[in-house]
Image (cartoon, rainbow, N blue to C red; front, side, top):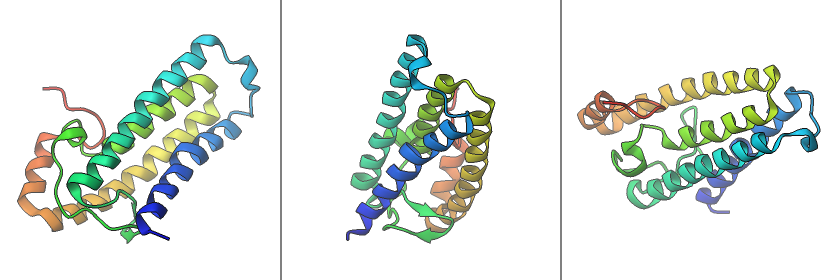
Length: 162
C-alpha cells in the first residue's frame, strides 16, 4: 500500500472521525435529534470551512512541498516535504491543516455543548502543540534561516493580524 495513502487515511480516521466521536462520547452521547437547527447549521458550515482548509493544505503540500503531512512525533509515516511552503494556505499560518481541523472541531463543540467535549478538545490542542513543536525543530534543521524568517512572520495555528 502507498505510504501517502496510509498518511491520508490515518489523518482521516484520527481527525475527521475518531476525535469528533470521542468528543461525542465524552459529552454523554446526546441524541443527535435534539440538536437545534442553529447548532446543526453551525456544525455543517464549520465542517465545510475546516475540512476544506485542511484538504487545500494537503493538496498544496503534496504539489508544492513534495510531501505528506503525516509525521507523528518524529516518525515519518509518509514522505516528508522537501520544500518550505510559506504561501497559499501556509500564508495563513504555519499549520493550516490543523487550523482547519480545529475549526471543524469547534463546530462539533458548538453542536455538542458539553464540558466533556471541551476537555477532549483541550487535550487534543495540547497534544498537537507538542507534536508541532517537535516538527518545528525538524523544519528548522531542514530549512534553516528561511524557516526562522517564516516563523517571525507567521503564527503557529492562528492567522497573524498585522
